[in-house]
Length: 375
Image (cartoon, rainbow, N blue to C red; front, top):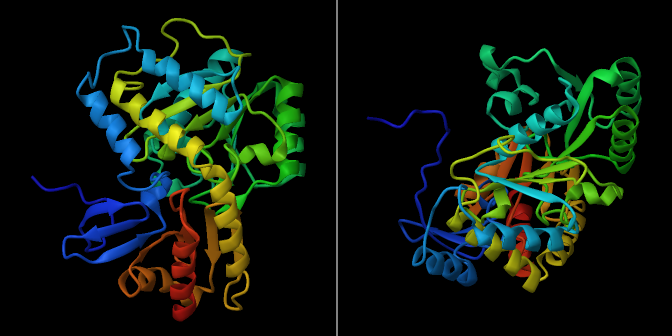
């Protein structure tokens, strides 16, 4: 049997990681400024994280949600405290796509409606409902096509208001990334997010703040939507929650009421997943990692804006997009193969930086020196 060939693969075999550094099987060191799509939030093989998981493995790794799992309660309490949403409710699953799938389903259960507003260049996952609100026809199979989704321009207040005026009584929810990831690190304006909140309140729709990539402290606040001073009804999360252990979640406003059987999962919220997620929050809290993300991120953004050849620098905290001219689309590969620095891309000429939240200034300077050399 062969691997189903759906990923473009770099010929690099990473076998070891520590903090923001990784090594391949030939002993070559790399600076990791991508963290496997914003997943590595507290650095590779963090000692507290490793010990938390190891200790849990010696107790029990898994049992189903048919029994009490005190770690889930502990995680909910810690997450509520760190995120500032202590009166919210937590549902645990396995991935970001599942989190968005369940968020949309939950909103539809709550108000009995079908229509969803999503936005241009959005990415919300690859499962059936999540991919239908993703603005990429190439990855939407015929079975995923959904006539209930309305795509609007991102950050266009006028078109949002007009759509609610025309169809507001039928709109179930609005789903939006606070900072678009795959869409090019585009930041939702405060005005736009505030308008979504007020229109959802006026028309009885739900505000789903997709925080899968832009959440969990990456922006310098726990949810990037927090910059607008509004609270969403549902916050889907994943990626950075488990620092590599598969876990997703939705944080749910107290206005939404559960009933038995409403949502469900086999693996979601298992003992190991909760141990991983608790370790991440503990390290974030103890190390003031949101403050570090803001500090180091602001430094990188400021320095990157000084390069004449950079068209635009977008983002907040340690979620940064570097928009280069089209003839410089080679820079990301040069960073990897010449300078041994992992970064990401959201188009051939936009470099994405999504490093661990405890990235040091020294590592930031190492990147800036290499970047300067290449452009």
